[in-house]
Image 1 (spheres, rainbow, N blue to C red):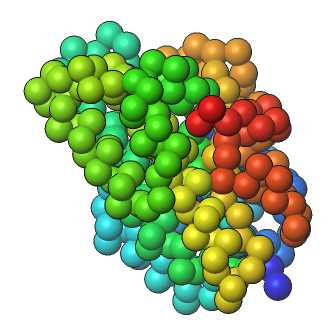
Image 2 (cartoon, one colour):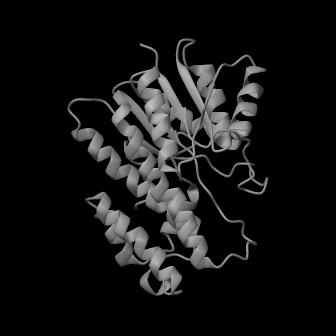
Length: 277
């Protein structure tokens, strides 16, 4: 059976490099979907990869639009009957010099990087087949942010037992940031960093659910840190190119059956790099 892979937010940057690497490393009969919010940008990206001799397919996807995610789900179900690899790369970040009030940055960043990504997983995960791999793209910024969080808040994160608890913590950060009171309660002063701590925590919870799924054994979720990569999001600064940034993500996505070491945790440069320590 051919394997089906989807990379969200993949018309450029790290996501684009993930599609390229998957196309090169999977078998010819496998299918890799490049997705983008804007069809013209996505189709251009596919053409660029076709010039390299690769054959990704395009499907429109805006993770902030529930109907868009459902349309992708319906397409995958009809065309392939399932999904084997999901790399959740779509994300947003404000530039350091952006004048947008922090309250707004906290709301928008966590809506996209946490809530919208989680919703996408909810919609697409019923398609996952036995031994599927889900890779949630996080960041070394999560580790840095963890060090700036209060001890009580850290304990709450370490002891999370449900997605509902995590949702409430993320919403609490947004609500407190709206009143400029987040730091008083042990929350960090970084919207992006906190969103990646939250998405890392979600990865742990998701993997626990996978372990309970006796109908689809072998499913594993990982969090991945691409590193400091030269992309539009990093304002073209960094010490890795996009292919180097994609390496660990694709390595995790292609972990063989039975490879479960570090499941639910974050990896950086192909090594375990836990956030919650």
